[in-house]
Amino acid sequence: MKKVFVATGAIVLFVVLLFCAYFGFKKFVNRGVKETSGAASSADAGAFAAVEDGGKWGFIDRTGKYVINPHFDYASPFFEGLALVKQKMKYGYINKSGEYVIQPQFDFALLFSDGLALVVQDKKYGYIDKTGKLIVTPQFDEGLPFVGGTAAVRAGDKWGYIDKTGKFTVKPQFEAARFYLGDLACVRAGGKWGYIDTAGKFVIEPRFDDAAGFAGGLAVVMLGGKWGYIDKTGKLAIKPQFEIAVPFFTDISPVRKDGKWGYIDKTGNYMIKPQFDEAHAFTGGLSRV
Image (cartoon, rainbow, N blue to C red; front, side, top):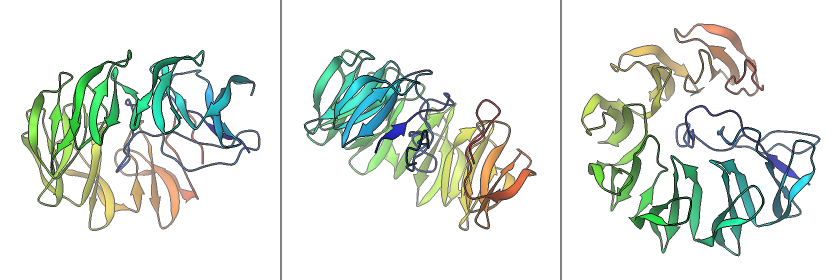
């Protein structure tokens, strides 16, 4: 049975973490293909779809015709012109002709984001450009993709932020860190999440049980086991009341309450009352439920 991975339109580059991952890949049912779970992601518009068939991965066009026959152990959708593939326990990158641009050589890797890709060699994290050249030598204990010119990395047990030369813009000092979305990033200190500016100074002091980045002027935060939204001053814009809440990538956003999904606007009013077993962000005026 084939499993098809296709992507929605670009929203913020890489939403690998919605709570833990804003960006991933949206997986859905098409032509009798079994749906698999996953987070929403952005990829090249009109790109081929990565499919698994008989344990091997390849790519099909919109008609379902193979354009790259299945022979990879894993393949991602195309992002920034390249797709991540795995063969013989190593990761590399191919172009849309199926040719290797970067030979499989990494123990782990992620898609290109902001022109660079996160790679792992000998359990250390670094970054390469699209020729495969190491731009930031693997030296960190963990890392996230570049977004807006910076990346969160862990050195020892503390997280900080680097620029594309590998120089720290915010020294490692946090228990956990996530992407800068705009001029603010959420970080954890003293067991609580807050928000820092590009200089690493707290703009919103850590007081949340969990948090995600700002989108549409609001950020999703957790207090007392429930999710709500704050504005950029840290004031609650929508009180915590949801089991799950999604960032406002459009003017309305899906939320789950009492086991059902609905849609709210930025004032917290329901535009569509909770009634669905699942829901996704609106793209192009439509949403899958």
